[in-house]
Image 1 (cartoon, rainbow, N blue to C red):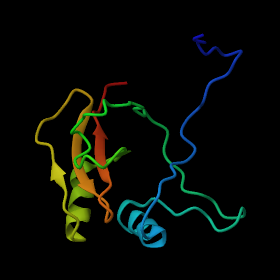
Image 2 (image 1 turned 90 degrees about the vertical axis):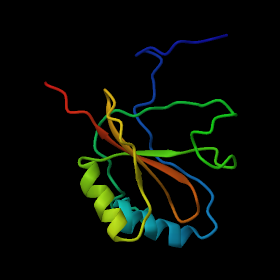
Image 3 (image 1 turned 135 degrees about the vertical axis):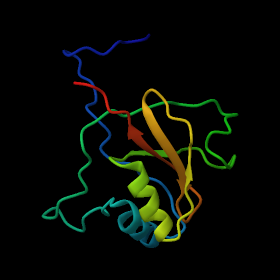
Image 4 (image 1 turned 30 degrees about the horizontal axis):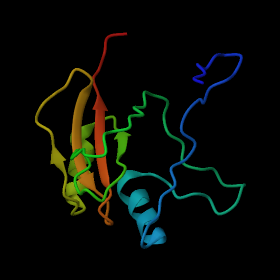
Length: 132
């Protein structure tokens, strides 16, 4: 039986976390903090966690045969929104991180691709500026 969500039944309001395995969780957490500004999970409940800005989020399962994630072993890819793709790309490249900028500008914005130190694919997205 397929149930369609309703305000009465409830719905999720956003992504509250992303949990994944890593060979070196501490080092990978530092890399995300140092290079992308994603703070690690606080060590106690008095500390504030990383806060993302409100905005659109694509939630899209892909076919098992997709090549979109790079290596066939990758089963997920992060897509981070950024305010200024060029500035973020320059910052990452200055830190020695390889980044590929997609030269095509799409109706929904611009994109770049990179991988974290453990080979997990990351896409950076600068949403298109739309008139209010």
